[in-house]
Length: 125
Image (cartoon, rainbow, N blue to C red):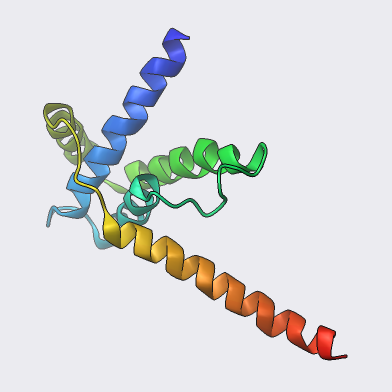
């Protein structure tokens, strides 16, 4: 149980560190883009796969966020990431991100439109 608590704290710290990395001019642009996507997804109140869907609803949180963090961290120079992690530990929390929620809603709407576009000819038959 102690392992899970420390893993969760590390994830939270790294999301905050990536938020800081995304705003820092020393961060490479590709790392900024990946960091922004990871932070937006992690902080969004809306998931791509809703949590009420059994098993799969929680798998996205257990896989997407940690894998995104791993990718973003690898794209940021090591010394710079250490600086962001130190700064993240000093912060208590990040502000809510309404933009992230809007992006997730937009993705759902695009997916819905694509499904309707693909399935409509089948129903018109």
